[in-house]
Every structure is written in C-alpha cells, then in structure tokens.
Image (cartoon, rainbow, N blue to C red; front, side, top):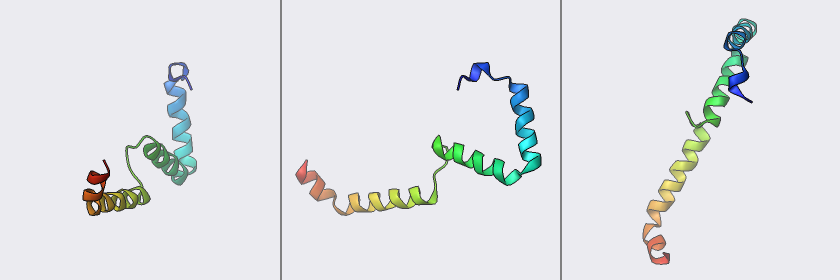
Length: 67
C-alpha cells in the first residue's frame, strides 16, 4: 500500500466510524499491527524467549565447546 496516496482525512474518518461501530474490532486490529511491527510482544513470544535464554544459559559451556 502506498501511504502517500492515502487521504489522511478520509482515513481518520474511516477509523472514527470503525471505533463508533465496534471498539473491540479496532482494538484487536491495532494490537495485531503493534505485534506485527514488534512494538509489543505476545505472552507466547515472551515465554519462548525465556525458554531459549534458559537453555542457552544452561548449555553455554557446551555451545562454547562446539563453536
């Protein structure tokens, strides 16, 4: 999508209408965009990262020997 071609006033108007109709939908879409752009992370991502960090710490010496 070419952002330069979007009329920002029309876009704002559309977003306002969506919010009036269904705030939950807008919230879900906004959250999804933030996750896709890695502005926020999901609980699952946090758990996976913690598991990876734990395993790397646990097997740090093994990885060093293998390297």
